[in-house]
Length: 424
Image 1 (cartoon, one colour):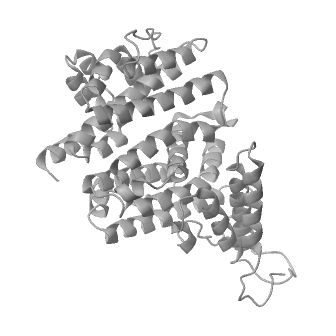
Image 2 (cartoon, helix red, strand yellow; image 1 turned 90 degrees about the vertical axis):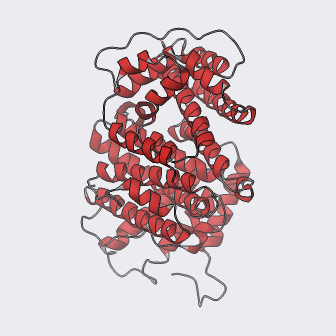
């Protein structure tokens, strides 16, 4: 790793936990100076990940991040009656479709979250953010513009007609994740349709943001405990897709810096979710672990295996506190069982179905003669949760997709040709 990147990462780690210096951001005299000062407070761990990238990709990713934060500002801070139109206006200005600057956002109260204050300041400096986009190469500008147009459309739609949290996550962060993966992957992998898997990463990232921000109303819960439990249970299915994507992106990403960036974001997001349920993180030094994982396929695989095991532990730590599950039951390995089907194809529904029936295969065979043990009860409930998760992935307006899922479930439930008989 070259000296400028090392210096950037070192400075970023020093600033990571500090409150944003809004006065310093306002005092930035040029777009480049603003980007340099705003990257860490706007992106936090994502900004550290961007620091791993080579200079051209780093400039593109920085401009894309700051532009996305401007859209967040207009989505969250505009008056509700005008928010959708304000988002569209911001997209049009950032992409160069119009020279009309969007409306000024309302002043924020003194107790506002740090992230919202930074977003609003970036919206004030939208002309500078647009200048950062203009400075990109034509190809990079076109890529980022496409992302902003797609994100803005989903944001405006959600304001006017609220989407499910999964649909919103996939439409906004899913678009960003797919863009990022396509940008750094090999040509062969970039031509593969990975949207199903990148959408899973987006759901995890959005859920972590919702948990951090305490979005009780969105999830219809009353307190932090309920929110944490709901978020963690909903992450089981997306986690399967996220790990499948990381299995592919490791050998499918030529740049060591890009691999390190992916590893760092995965490790830090995992650590945040583990902390939410009082489970130990996979790594105490994420920067060093990400750098090592990026160095070879061997270390990448070791990192993923360790993260899978950590995620399984976090799931069971959370379940141990739930009244619906027996405390102290043997752990059912959902993510770290290394079922071979997980690497077979870039689609989440087959992954969920195959994992569900891999769990079912661990249950006792033959007629029940008494109550199942605590571990088997937990396994059965997790398998049920995954099966319903597969059904939730099927759009309600696509009956042919539901028929295809039903056929897949039926085929998975049938005994293999070499089996001596069906499960009783």
